[in-house]
Length: 356
Image (tube, rainbow, N blue to C red; front, side):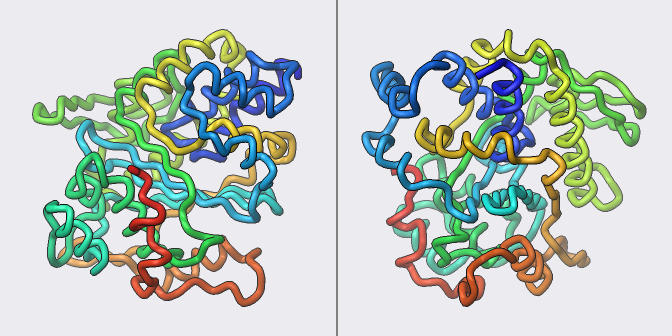
């Protein structure tokens, strides 16, 4: 395996796992592969198990399962606590080699589902009534149940809950410390800042001070860029800037000739700051798609919403149309249940409790 292919794997796998804010996950995968260039996938798994890397006992068996037609995953970037500042759902189509990324504005107002409400109440967690911002769900559920509840509510929002072929399989969570460190380690990202950005929040230890124009952003600057939301359209415009930054980052990763030399340092950042249920067997199974996936096949979307005087509300009709377009390659007759109507047996509670 030559360095050119390893480098392409880094970029592509980053993209398959969400591209934006978490390329470190792909970098972690790449260093594992680079250290075992002459080993079979099974030998790679056994070597990593010997190093106590947390590989599941079923990893070798998982290799035989292949890659499904659709793989859905969620990225949750937190603000230093448990409030999700970035919520992105990705769907990878293994037949068309297309990756769709749906950004969910953090200020989207939703009502927690009955099962989510009952679950939080049972666990003696605060269960909000009425409409609240979707980014607060993970916070209310706490560290132990935050990912599980967030996944459940996002699946209901998108209308994919209850469909085994569409429901979210993987999660990646991280704080912005990981984001800052990876940007700095890579030497920054050149980006055309669309406007003057100034904002200070001592409570969050957040200071944003960017001038408009093309410039090299370090980790702190990049964090300020993607978190700034003092726009006329608020969070909706912020999502657009995040997506533009994602595309610029991917393009520059492809041109980064020093990337391979920094793998070990980047992998250290990954292991220290990123939480995910992606294991070594998953990495190996998706590896065969590296040469076929075209970076230009990445489509970005923003969750369809309705602007009201009370805030941003989901446009469920347009959401369903968007998701049907994304899953247009699904087998005939596979239609997920309407949002909020799936039974508990299809929920992540308790069968897919990611915190277990």
